[in-house]
Image (cartoon, helix red, strand yellow):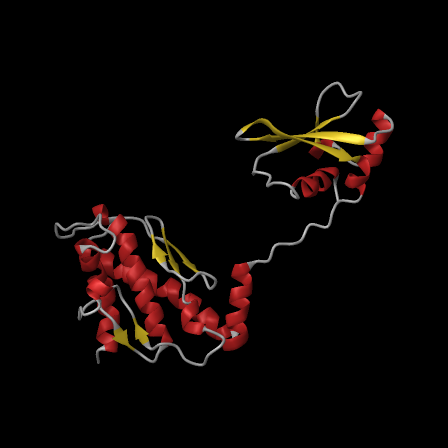
Length: 247
């Protein structure tokens, strides 16, 4: 472990270190502050500047000059603290569904999300002369809510693949004000993948709502989250799935 890494691990006991920060060493006898990345080792530091009991470190963040100052015993840099490793919730959640449903099946879900979003977008380009960007597409197993924004859609199908049960609700629920709609309302399906497709259609509609200026659309309110403009676009992105689940 380098001196820079040792100092950083000590500082992280007290605060985070923003990206792009510098750790400057204030060493007696040095003409100027030393960049911790340029100091090879404690023995090299002691050999050059003589015996040291304490090292003063200035945290220089992008947000402000010398935001914090830390005093470390030299022995702390020789034996840095064992900082607990943070768990990766995203990886753990994905590993859990793989353990219950198999890697091939879960990878198929993730591939379907990517493919189906591209498929629906391609159809929308043709039907409504959409010339805008394509969204970045993510599948997240550790989040509870799916969402669509100006740049991306995030699909969270974890509730469909709960490890503690062998079933899910079978009913795809929509917002109260559109639940009875034959075009974008609730539906019943035993196939989890139909629910995944509905999530993609719902969130892609939000993405297209944000980018409605790139398409030829009727004059509707596209600013309200689940307003008439979004409902119209969602009826387009849901049409492909509706033909399947209604037969």
